[in-house]
Amino acid sequence: MVESPEQTIIREIGEELAFSLDVSKLQYIRRHHDGDVVSHMFLYPVTDEMVGAQLLEGQRFEFLSVSDLVNRDVVPPHRDILEWYARQKTLSA
Image (cartoon, rainbow, N blue to C red; front, top):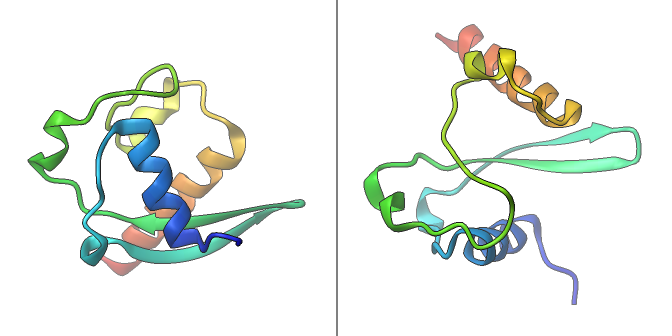
């Protein structure tokens, strides 16, 4: 059985951060295409519920603003997605 994007993000966050997303807070934003790669964007308003999250996979996790990414090495498609999101927030403000 193929997972939906929503099922995938819920499973991945659980596997990588030992954290269960509150599905009612998960909002699908859009599909992003980069060549043959398709990414699905979600919005999840984070509050203090992630204080107990534990990194189980990956090198580290941290919360950053888009402006924090200027001096960071970020996978180009991820940077594109985050910059697109920041532009949308600016346009709607």
